[in-house]
Length: 425
Image 1 (cartoon, rainbow, N blue to C red):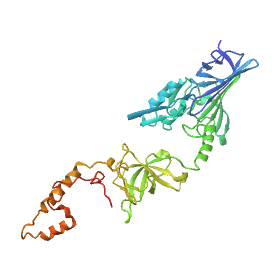
Image 2 (cartoon, one colour):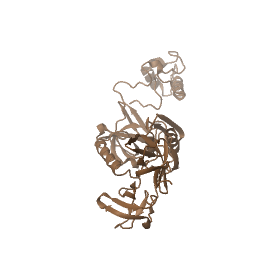
Image 3 (cartoon, helix red, strand yellow):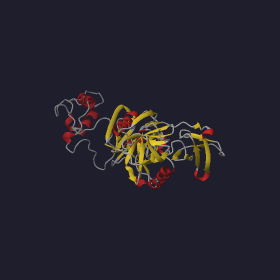
Image 4 (cartoon, rainbow, N blue to C red):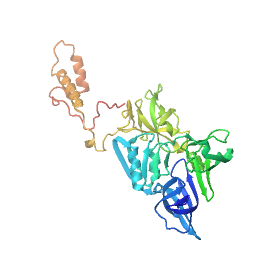
């Protein structure tokens, strides 16, 4: 006859199953004797079955007992994956990234409902834990591994627990902890709403299922919100956030909603910006200076253009527009671009022969100017046409333009003559 609590049929003296709101469950097990157990195993607690994998780093024997830890599923979301790059002009699917991570780690993926189906044209997976790639693309949606060993990305349902299936033994309101006695370990799970014997309903966010020879207890934590990481993980993240948030580093995407100009500078010195991602936790910004990183450069960006904002030395008092979007970004072409230099602006290399060639329209313009001057500057003015004085003046300022002094065709412009769209002030 199989014991009430066992691992692969081997009787267990005690089992403590830790079930967080996010991530895999794990079980610390004490077995009678010294059975040789490794790899995938099944934990049985009454009618409840849990599929997991023995963690060899947390297993061993003492006396006539074996203590071991079993982690949900393949126990491999903490395994290290190699770096990998994704690109799709139609945008990379979140499922593709997670399925690859699960397959490489050896985990099984079930229900999948991320915050967004597609995450962008590019995604770069750093080398590191498989769980990091998973969490990075699901957009804050809770992920967890069920008792069946299958990983799911979705919120857990909140369902009222059967009042007849549990008895409240202890309630610590300050710690939001409720201790329950249960006969069926399936009676209370994450998302169960407890009301019997309590002043107000409590929703289970994290639990420990404790199995002893004569009892089954559930120690439930009912604080936080859906998808919370639990008390310890939440506290550790709070400490890290406190240290990290002293300075604000990184580049943040913003959208131009207004260019703020002045009488002296109608092109605008500063920008009014709207945050692209609200979940980044940053507000819209007013009157931000532009520091594009190129000496002498200034632009009047198009409305709706995306820019990158950073904070100088991580100081929240010093936001600047540090970068403008590339060709694939919204509003890539500015309304106006100014390049200033005290002596010269060189387009191309230092060698004039490498300067950009003129467009055909520029040559046509020179042709028309030359033809008009040729027609005007004839050897002798027409009698009584009223143009003699003007012709004399033109010859005075441009002596070589008289017919025969220079070739009658249009002049060939130098290679470094600018385009008709380049204004030199």
